[in-house]
Image 1 (cartoon, rainbow, N blue to C red):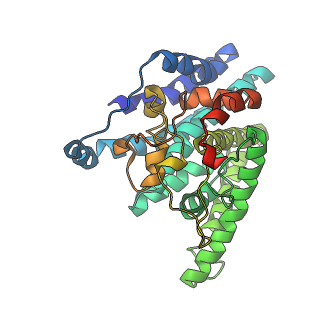
Image 2 (image 1 turned 60 degrees about the horizontal axis):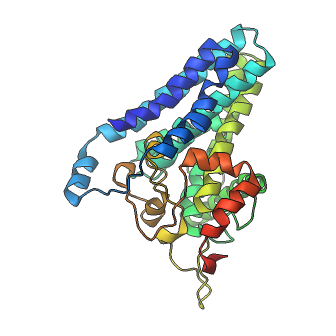
Image 3 (image 1 turned 180 degrees about the vertical axis):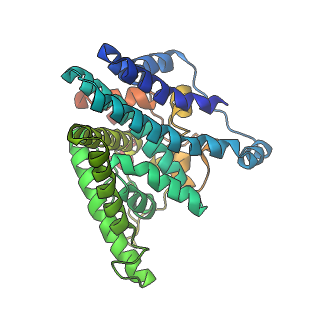
Length: 342
């Protein structure tokens, strides 16, 4: 039941949006001030589950429903927020706070949950994952992440891997543009392998594009132009939060290129791990990213800690704040990168 805390993000976000004024920044303060302070004083949790406990957790469907409910939460938050923006006259600073809060919800309870569902074997779970990506304008993430990032992580072929001494803002440009272009290349390759034409129902990238346009048009016709612009900006905030997490997850880590020209296989050493308790719970164990890349089919409730994985000195929220200030990030992280990877 600890994962119910993941719902604290939309609850606090919607509370701030409802109260408006300075309260519209309540979620921003919660994520980037309150949580980092708590993680600083709370102990790390490096425990793993016994095989018997893993089996029990995998059979418990509650862990799945905790993810599914985010569909209602995310779209409920969108509709509620759009109504407030449409009906009330808000000061510019309030609109900024509201858009930031909504963007955080889209990133954490939207894209993050979509990432987990996108790795599932059941078709309806993958569909739910795709639906959660729509408000952040990042449906192409489904194609590129599963067919690109997990194959090329920690190599120069992966736009979602931050290089040594690369700052966050340069990485945003690299990853946002690179993953989109790469997603189309992957889709073209998949079409060729599956012998399907461009207008096939199996061409995900085509339908993703159509769905994204329909989403924004629907917001425009149901609400108004102002709501559509803010919905678009909130989506950008959502995917930039995702890319900030991508930045800290693989910063400076590299796989060796073998004499054959191929890269060594992905191991627990090619992603940064964090055992900070609150970040683990709020993000459905995304912070145990080393194990996720080592075995991408493992469900979030059984992800494990590995001693050999490089460890973040702070949790994800604190690391994100640090990454916004490149010199500070370099001073803390560069000395932690294995010498053979620099």
